[in-house]
Length: 248
Image (tube, rainbow, N blue to C red):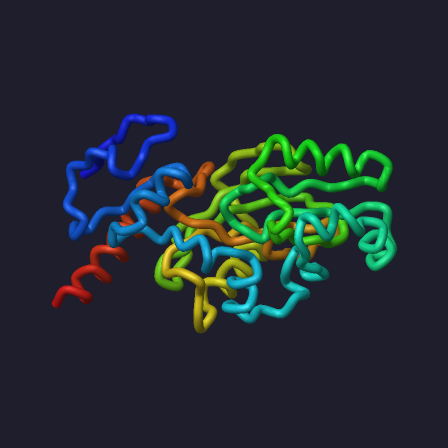
């Protein structure tokens, strides 16, 4: 059973009219903004605090060599803007990569090639995104990625996966490599995960190794070329089972 909610920009929580009681077993699939209003539903796994990089990195306890940005430094946007030359020197490179610590897409991670136009790029971020001085960002070296895959994980099980990028070009195929699956399975099998249902992105590097890119909220993430029936059935069964156990 599915109910579609018409999109209304800048909707307030008190203005939402939903056909469900807050105690019902409902799985929201929405934008991040609407998802924030629906976090009270049992099937919502949008936990923005748990899905910040520094939190899930520490929760999973997977060694840094398995992470795309495993050489990371976390700092504030203000500190990076003020002291960017120090970061180039610390990494001994003229190519840096920055991304938000938050999983709520304050801005899309981007490479900064040399310091010449860096300040104009950072200023553009200020104007076009929700980043502020105190926003935490991840700083690391630029990496060369070949493939990118997304896996949907529920209750320590991988439900399905999809390729979504090839050499930085959008490429949606119901396909993933064995190595990418194995690394996603390592994430799924961790003793503790940040939430019970989430997505995990895996990259294939130029040298053939695979790395964890990031985790995201299942309720607000794209499925790309994953089989929607497999995902809907798998997540629904997991959520219903968990809901029933809680209410026995």
